[in-house]
Length: 282
Image 1: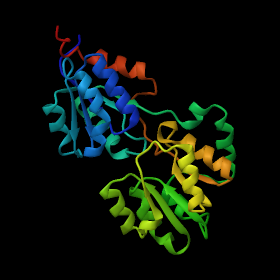
Image 2: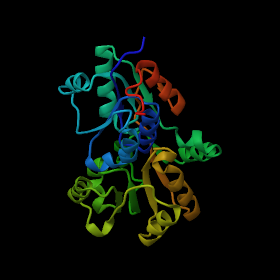
Image 3: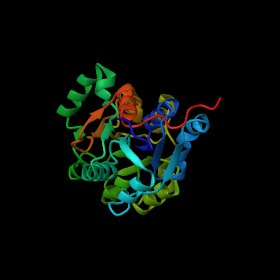
Image 4: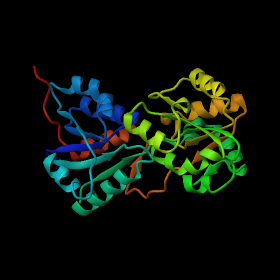
């Protein structure tokens, strides 16, 4: 039997915006959680379309083990659809723990790996592994000398940048970041000078990506294995065109209770556990 309540969509990604739109279109009540006001803008159009029939809320903030249970109760959450970034390990682990504890259904929406979406790219990845260009963690990468003397572009988000601070005297480091105060401050604290930072919200076109790498005379690029949704296909395309090694950091290993990469399956999960919120007004 379906129950009244809300879906908790853990958002902040492009695919979560697509899921929010589909959930709203299905007239299901949903609360999307994001960590910044900027990320909230991903859902503006979905909110506008849903306001007359399906309450779609966007909650901004960071949840902890102390506040998560209250959040679930306050929002009347009956099921969780986790569409957070593949590297947002903390929120996924928290959601898994609290839903297991409270017996709330959980489904992970995992963006496909680029090799699954890119077909023939799998062979390229295997070649990269043989060359040692795929690392399991940032710590593993910085423990090698692969960046020694290189002009390195880091497209990894702001959180790992502190790990590269000791490399500021051993390589010439650049970073492409989101245009946020937090990101810029973190980069400066890690030893990056303003002339070695480029702040722009994705998607980044191949032409712009290529122009940036050429302008900075980049010789090595470090990125995350974030899939096509994270622009990994563009980076690999440009790297191949310019003959620049692309160092990829593998996704953190997490065991999800259940997961899918199919939007239809994710929507069916929401419909299974939630009855339509408000019918369209006539």
